[in-house]
Image (tube, rainbow, N blue to C red; front, side, top):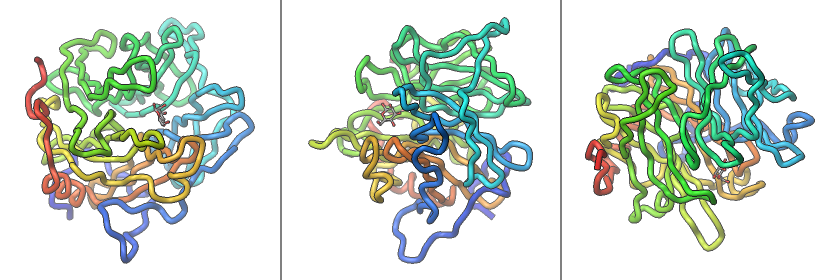
Amino acid sequence: MPKYTITAESTKNMPWESRPEKTHGVLWRYSGNPIIKRNPTEHCVRVFNSALVPYGDGFMGVFRADHPSGGMRIHLARSKNGIDWDIEDEVIKWTDENGKPFQPQYGYDPRLVKMGDTYFIMWCTSFDWQPTIGMGYTKDFKTFTRKENAFLPFNRNGVLFPRKINGNYMLLSRPSDNGHTPFGDIFISESPDLTYWGKHRKVMKTNSQSSWQSLKIGAGPIPIETSEGWLMIYHGVNLTCNGYVYSMGAALLDIENPSKVLYRTRPYLLTPEVDYETIGYVQNVAFPCAALLDADDGRIAIYYGAADTYVGIAFGYIDEIIDFTKSNSQLVAGDADIGRD
Ligand code: BMA
């Protein structure tokens, strides 16, 4: 029995491997990584920062795929075991809320969450060829409705909470400039209807004393509700002489006021170390976008993009991640506030 309570549906058939001997660190990598290799379909030459949910007796995914044309697109994928994936070669076809075709010019870094009988998809979309938060939904993974853009450019890493908080939907995002890409901090916005967003607050800033998260940070998988707060796995970026390095960390946010950070890790949970993370289209990237949870046993499988080329899985125990986050925490000025100023 886990020490801390997790309020989420359990996924009993999620991929899992126990921790190898002689492993340090809170997370460990799946021995079969990367689970998706180069050129999985004719038009998908690299599949990486991708999201999935349990669906039926298996899993459904929205996968970020780069095309030979250079386009960044989102494709549907199915799996029985969460490891072997059947990726559609056609992109997801969106209509607007009146049923008219409404394709994004590009789409990348999707997130996926089920609320009630609806699956919501967020992604970094093109708004007049400038990045911002796209949002859509499906009930059956056959028809997909795209809402109008949730935010103005420039914004990235839009991540919905899995339920309303104090009566409103909540979305994390990272406003940014038009390049690659400071500003670097995570904000939160509220909406009664997933259309009109306001009450924007700052959640968490970069940490100049912790190099892996010193340039920019962005929310990763859908936040996980626990007895200790919302567990937010996030990515942090360091600018080195040789380019950016993307690592993963964790934070606990207040349950009622998630713009307040309770704890956040000064050390990373996982940083690029193995070949499929350090060598690829973009070297040194571990970019988490989704997690499967077994709430009963407190297990988590984190799906992350590796080197903008592959998909990998890392495993862990929620209790250990929470204890690590609490005992290795360093807040930045303002993190603990509700973030209105
Ligand atoms: C970010 C996004 C991600 C990508 C990362 C590293 O700005 O474009 O999709 O994984 O850069 O290249």
